[in-house]
Image 1 (cartoon, helix red, strand yellow):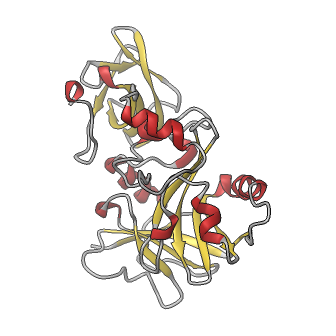
Image 2 (cartoon, rainbow, N blue to C red):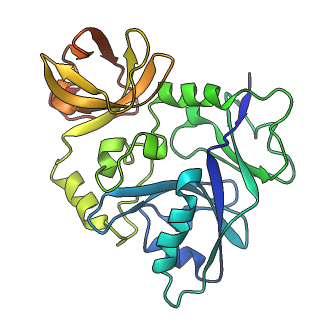
Length: 280
């Protein structure tokens, strides 16, 4: 049965102007030229040192690109992109749009994607469903579920949720699954932070991964250490209802893990995740 949820913690940035595609192309981790009506692109903005600062979906709306972004990052992202604008013919502003997620859709487009909606399949995983942008004041319909249901669904899939799971100026994209989840282009050429991202891949430098976990009892607070034999090997990121994502050392993914030395943490590696042979 199709499920649709309004995501109140998301905002939409409108990018207009003749240079909108080339402008973003030189800054973000994925190939912006692939965004088209009905086809979204997931990308990240990195620091010059190649560390995560923001991520967003890029949807094509004809004469503008729309960035579906974490609401708390929207103003900061506009300011960061504006600093690189220079002479590019680009304008950035918050758009009067709301973000919906729809999943368990089956074939065809979601019922909630009405005539005024801008919709595309979530480019990360087919099971993630669709991203849908609708005008302010437009709801997901009377049969909508709560955004908590979406949060639980994306935790089961192992999908990161912005600053809840990633650390500004610390997280490397390959730690958070951006390669397997179609958040990086390896062929488009240079962008800010591209050198470290490529080096991390080709030299096999990833030592930690963000992975889905289940907890015995209530989920601990974010940043709670995860221990193996009393030694910290990772930490809790976002969580809900006994499920969560945790950043863990790859060498300890199959070890007995605990929080507070008492409550077990069980790692559930998703089918989409690729790990070094010794850790799989």
